[in-house]
Amino acid sequence: MINCLTKTDFIFPCEINASRKKIKGDYSTHWHDFHEIEFIISGKGTYIIDGVCHEIKKGMLFFMTPVNFHEIKNSDAEIINVMFSNDACSRNTLFDLTGSNINNIISLRDEDFDVVLTLLNELIFSASNNHPQYSSSLLDCLLYKAKISQKYKSSVNLTHVRAAMLYIQNNFRSNISLDDVASFVGLSAPYISSLFPKETGMTFKNYLSSLRFDYAKKLLTYSDLSITQVCSESGFEDYANFLRHFKKHFGMTPNDFKKTQINDKTISENY
Image 1 (tube, rainbow, N blue to C red):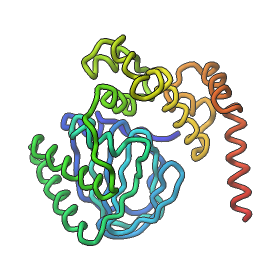
Image 2: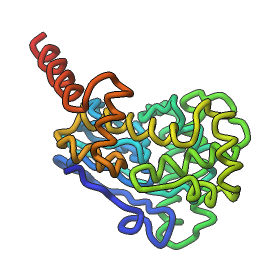
Image 3: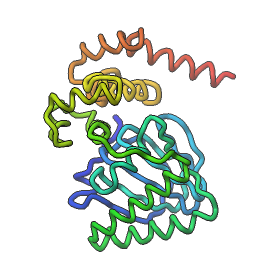
Image 4: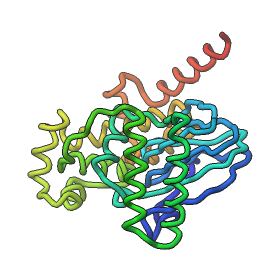
């Protein structure tokens, strides 16, 4: 079973938790209902995000969202870890980093290393001394630095739908409803429902299902969870309904999809 790290356990009652630590060995696959940044100060190892391996190197910044699951292998490194919620930073910048073009790994230029390290050390001090406004400002600076390091285009204003998408991304595994989303963005359910297709090209229900099915595919590809576990971990409550709609979306059952991934991996390893 993939472990779940929750806001209640790691960033409650504050919205930001920052620390400098050493990691050594293996850390099992997990996901969390908050965002996480891990900055590599020094060392080595392998960071695995959604089944894809990345070599740990100095100056790398790993940015994880609630949609990702990850693990670490053979590590021996010094890092700074930052865990934070949606409410701890600018949602506009956060949305730019969590959109469809997300790159979970940012390799900083040598000249940017000391700047980011200074920001993070100050964030550790601020968060540990309970200065929430200052901590949020520092986190915004860090996220914006990550954004421009990836050469993102200038962002547009945060819309209600963009805010809703962030909420859904953080809560799609639970039994969320349109009313929950409407309450979060401060609009009526019918109105946010009418805005969704205009901005995303799909209804709220289809957007939520798409996010869940994409995550289910990741679990089937990269984890050893059973089909029942994949259904539950992806936010589906009705197993029969999950099987039926998965086949409708992808033209095969979850079990057949998992078999194709196993066969593809076997062929790849043989070559």
